[in-house]
Image (cartoon, rainbow, N blue to C red):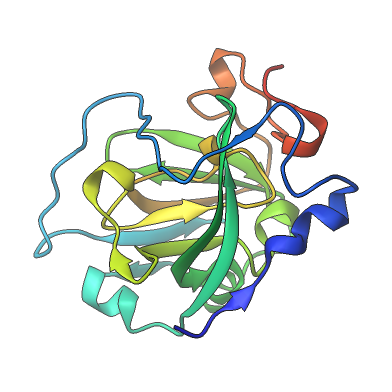
Length: 198
C-alpha cells in the first residue's frame, strides 16, 4: 500500500514520537462513551453546514469517491496508550473545506457523530492534511468498534478530538464546547504538553 508518512509530526510540537505519559501498544483498545450505533448504508449521510458558502451532503458511496489518500499516522489516546504506524485511508479536512468554501468569519469547528457525540477544535487545527475522515485502517474497512463506517483522525491531538461514527462538520463563527470538553477534558488536547484535562 502506498501512503504518506506523517509520523514525524511530533517534531513540530517539540516532543518525542511517544508523548509523555503514553505507553505504546500494538493492540487497538476500544473506548467509547456508549454502544456502537447502527447505521444503514442506504440512508447514511455526511453533511457540512454552518459558516460556509456551499452546504455539502454525501452518501457513503459518494463520500468514498472524493479525492482520498492513505497516511501512516500515530494515534494517541487520552487514557495513556498510543498505537504507532496506523495506516488510515480517507478524505482530508482541507479537501472538504475547499469544496465547502469556508466563510471568512468561520473560526471554529464542531464535529457531529451518529451517536450524538460532539467534539470541537479551532478551524486552524483542522486545516491540516493530517486531519482525515477515514474509512480504512491498515487496508481494511474500519469496524464499528473503531468508528466505522467513518471516523476522524487527529494525530496532533488526543484521539477524543477525532470522533468515531462521524456524520458531519459544523463550521462556527464562535467557539463552542463538545461532549467531553463540557465535562472537563482539555479543549486543546496537545499530547506533547499532556493537555488531558482543563
